[in-house]
Length: 518
Image (cartoon, rainbow, N blue to C red; front, side, top):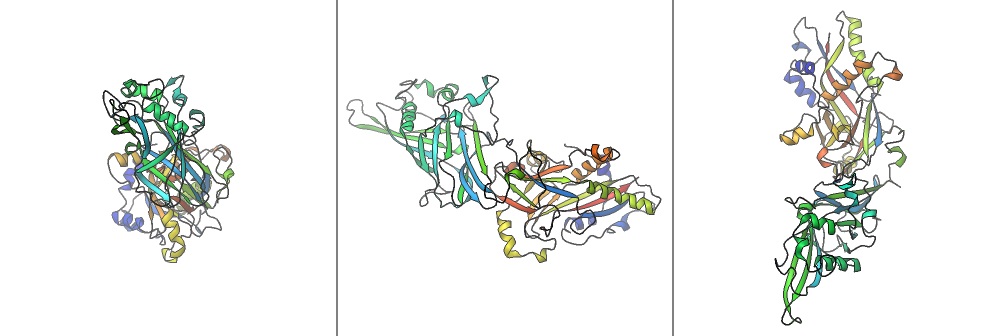
């Protein structure tokens, strides 16, 4: 998909900077399709123009919008663990938890381990909050389960599968009874700035602690388990943190940086001469991620979406169903719903009519057109083509809730961006793509330069346009508007106006600047 059209590059050089600069900022102005024509040399066999696809314009039915959701979004080894439960009138209930391996830190003593006849004191969850959403004063209770089976890692009978998806079900791999419980936030003293949370152990938890402190189990009184990571993960298989109950009100969600998170076991040991005396207090750390470890860094996030009672109808987002068109598009992270855009036959017919009309009125015999620039405008609910007509009071909540940037994909499961959204290049070279995709708060819309993509699907149409309509399959005519590629698990949620429909004051708009060619 990293395609490039040499012809397009050549023709782009003909477009003067004044034209490009004007088009970039003309999101809500009338189109002057003669702009720049004076710069084209006399006798030139190419002609430049602008075609707008928008409400009340010829070709306004150029796009269909649908909702789409897939469980095939990778959720493993993201570097972050997501926990929480949050309810929203638009997007329903989102519940997150994660399963993670863990590795030990340094023992209190290299030779004596936890010391003579150690005593357990407390277990503290160590967290590093990277991001959060919702009401951080609402207490949420969590259960921490011990992972009892590594079978989820089996691939063809051997350990090695570390790729998992957002619908991963840990039930078969964990103890059915929790080892610890904790409340976070607690509504008074803990919140996003917290780093340490005391966990309450159950009988299962006390059993786990005794094995960790080498007081019981297969490695009782043996320090060997603390010296080999591969042995460690085969015996201490991990922990799984899940909300104990669903949110009944707004709730909250947290993103935790795993390399700075883990848990600590506090204890004491006795004096060997007089065991009634306490010799030392001890602290042993266990890490959810260790950069230098060969084993023990597997983590899997699980997110459950329940759209019952929300504005999203579950049957309208099923990837395997024949989904209806919708007027409103929704985009959320955490493996939730995104918006599908399909360019209709009307779109291709309108572009073809551009040069056919010119041919009918002249003897130029144009055969196609090259896309110089294609700008897509996606407006928030309560947005308007004319920014001066926007009701600031009603659009501000949409602006504040929305993601700062959206990505566009030809394959959302594989996170394959359109040619313009070459996000790996952008990150690798620390540059900014012409694609943009950012929320323009002044205009109340997202603006995306999708020139290479439009040229691609136009070329694909040219290859099949002479086939009967029933056999005409235009490759990549459908794309997905979702969270940006490096923010798939971000918390903001976006509601936008989709295709032209009575409910939409400002449906999606596309401005195509082109050059006709022979």
